[in-house]
Image (cartoon, rainbow, N blue to C red; front, side):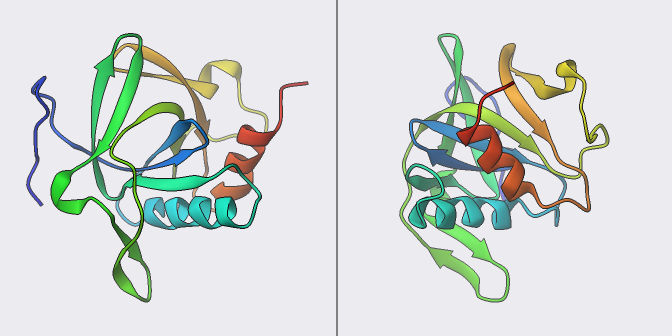
Length: 154
């Protein structure tokens, strides 16, 4: 796939994103880590009422841009509305053309811990601090993301 560029010159990034409610979950990780699977799981959780409505922004590659003090995510045009479903192949689905990133999920994260230190629960994307969930290789990310989106710190 080509590395498309935004107007600000930044290349697309290898990630997926789903808009849940008013903010997007940006899903990062190495190839085969389950980015598309988590994106589809979030969409299904939204349909099942576990989360607010959840709609695909982009799968596999997305564009990120700084807009004020926020990070905006958009699909790469050639991939807009496409998602990989393992066992079915590439499928079409509803999508939104942009969303503000409110959470980053890093799959196969080396710093994933049972009780993570506070500094690992945030990340900088183009200088903007965003809440983050590091997920270990052998852990299902969906319950962590649902918990992060539906609960508050004690």
